[in-house]
Amino acid sequence: MERAARTAEALVANLGSAPGRRVLLIGGESGSGKTSLARALVERLGGRRGCAVLSQDDWYHLGPRANEARRRADPSWRGLLELEIGGLGAAITAWCGGASQLTVPRFEGEQRTERPLDVSGTATLVVEGTFVLALPVDGLRILLTEDWRATEVGRLARGRDPMDPQSAEVLAAESTLVQAQRSRADVWVDADGRLEWASQGG
Image 1 (cartoon, rainbow, N blue to C red):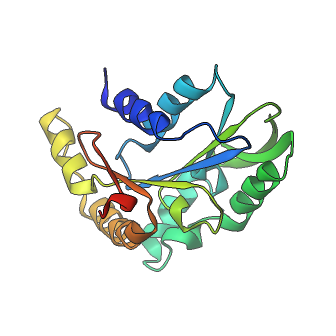
Image 2 (cartoon, rainbow, N blue to C red):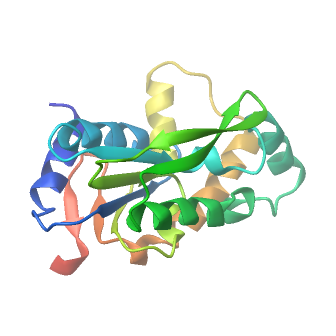
């Protein structure tokens, strides 16, 4: 069983069976496995309870190329400044309030559009993204602790080209912001998929 599936299985086993809607927030650095874990959770929860996913990547102010250019030109353009985080928070709040449909932004290339997302019948909302633990919403906060340096070692081992200095600087700054959210997490997941719960004194 792959790491994301093992982690999802362990998380679901600890969710309990309390009624009502629940939010799972998955944070972590670029390349740490947030999207893979979100998919694995959907597989575990989708058929049984119904599960929807929101991705932080849909809530950037700028398209991917424009945002990357802004990052390189302006060192202060980092973290929550890049995001329409209030819009993502509002979507979560609407879902918690019983909404059956959400309006979700999406980038098609550099063009931002909107799409309806049917969330009727869903009991779990998974929200994944680098900085989602900063959202002031109730939910289980999951932090993937693998940092960008470990991810880069893996890239090089697979024969990829070394990261350019500017990209490394962006990821180092991102790492500092993500690690500052560590105390917000309810559970930490290491590079091997092992869980450490804050309630157990982690």
